[in-house]
Image 1 (spheres, rainbow, N blue to C red):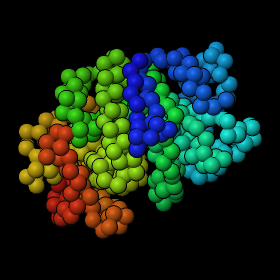
Image 2 (image 1 turned 30 degrees about the vertical axis):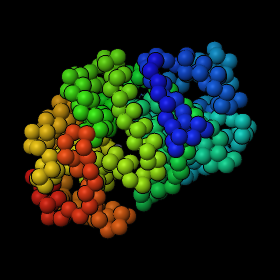
Image 3 (image 1 turned 45 degrees about the vertical axis):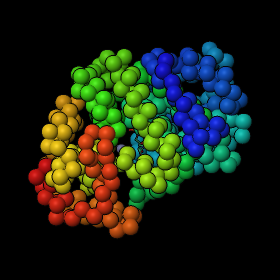
Image 4 (image 1 turned 135 degrees about the vertical axis):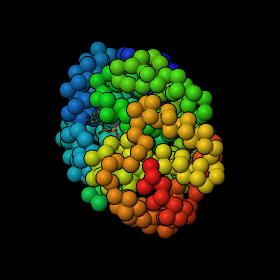
Length: 363
Ligand SMILES: NC(=O)c1ccc[n+]([C@@H]2O[C@H](COP(=O)([O-])OP(=O)(O)OC[C@H]3O[C@@H](n4cnc5c(N)ncnc54)[C@H](O)[C@@H]3O)[C@@H](O)[C@H]2O)c1
Ligand SMILES: [Zn+2]
């Protein structure tokens, strides 16, 4: 089992270990018992994960004699709301949770964001841990301590920064993950390679055939590990997204607009992949990125099964209007993360709409 430490502001009290491996659940629960972060754990999960893995995980807690109870939430982004958070808090109270209790998020990013959010406000904050079960949660949402819920008008509008006590990432959960969910994590992996780790780009090209739920999980371990380390490095420097953390938005400016324009019928990873392809074309067009790098990365996206073209029939006016709306949140400028070379991103504000339109229409 691999591990590394995340140290926010270098304060010991806010650093935590991320454990990564295959079939590590026994050891994870043993470490939880040793960690002594809580007397009793509430395992927060969703209906899908509970049906596939809930019993197995609960059995391990029983075997290790660590008190635990499961709370099952509805699955999917639509459950990531304030009413679900309130229902979770009420259920915790009803089951006798107090300040000596801990939460463990057993699920994807939705369960993780909700659990972290409730852990940060329940009785003014109790400890929580992540056991991420989607590739996206394993490489992205379980690291960095961003928690939150959506409002009907916009995603992730209410939230906190609350770091977990530890993260236990077991790749064997991925065996049951539907292919389209796997793709969501894959897009974030390629993103991290592009913005920070040319060596990881090489590795992805080499292992492209294993980048699927039934691929060789052992081959995926170093890929997940390196991606987590990139995210860790960035959030350690900039926990609250004042500057550097923005580069994690590579592909997301247009990606978010595409997602919203499709009324969220297009998965996040696919939208981000199209956004990354556009950012690469834009970087080359503005003279920052060599055409060979643009072509190589776009080929890698295609090789892993990620889309690089605008969805058929999507209106460029609609997408541009969505980006204009986001603009207001950022001082009236659309911030694009662009690339000079693999591992060398930079943030660019003030790209003319006409150029963005041209790129979208030709993509
Ligand atoms: N906090 C952060 O820093 C951060 C970063 C990125 C994304 N997010 C958030 O993460 C969320 C998306 O996360 P996600 O993609 O994991 O979505 P998700 O939690 O909705 O999981 C996707 C689907 O997969 C199912 N599932 C989970 N694990 C499974 C498994 N092992 N086998 C079979 N099915 C499984 C879930 O029930 C769900 O239906 C969004 O709400 C996003 O805002 C947060
Ligand atoms: Zn993303």
